[in-house]
Image (cartoon, rainbow, N blue to C red; front, side, top):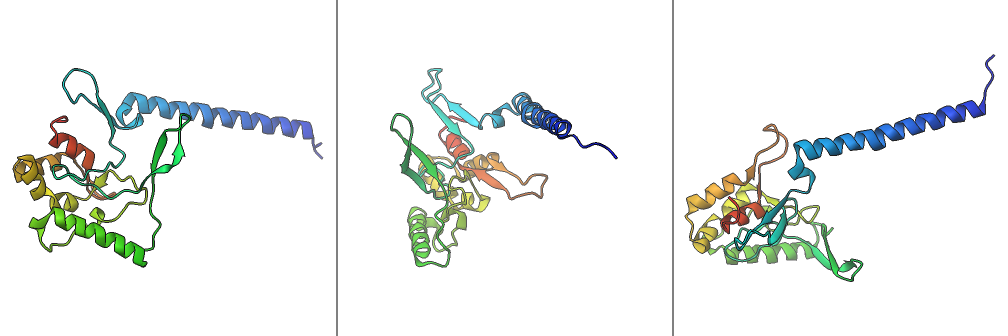
Length: 209
């Protein structure tokens, strides 16, 4: 019969723990970081776009393509509604830190119904040329994260005539910009086609080509 040794068992356990910590916590993490920085630096660093707005060679603005940002003027494409909150968290210097999330309102509740009705009326007022045509749902509902940067092609198409009217561009030019900012489903089957709102607006402003 083999003699059981607590010391030997603990030693092997500690050794196994150290090896797995090295593999999963250092080697694997380092490999993922290295691959990301070498082959996908733009995505790995937050999909940030720096814009030289006044042409002086200095980047005046930095935008993240992964976060929804509010546009409500007539000359820009509108994205999904967001639930920004600036009153809950602050940084070390006391400055407000923005965060967003879903409202957690039940679709069967009166509050949700009223909120959506207000958004519908706002959309209709901004797009009188659309009449009573159905409004794509993503223009009047918040995403689960509250920061979805994309809308559906149908929601983008809904805004084409307004954008053409207020930017001086033709409807075909607007649609060309939308097409350039549309991502198709992965492998043609995973997910849905989507339009990045920020990218469209930067192209409308002429600061992104």
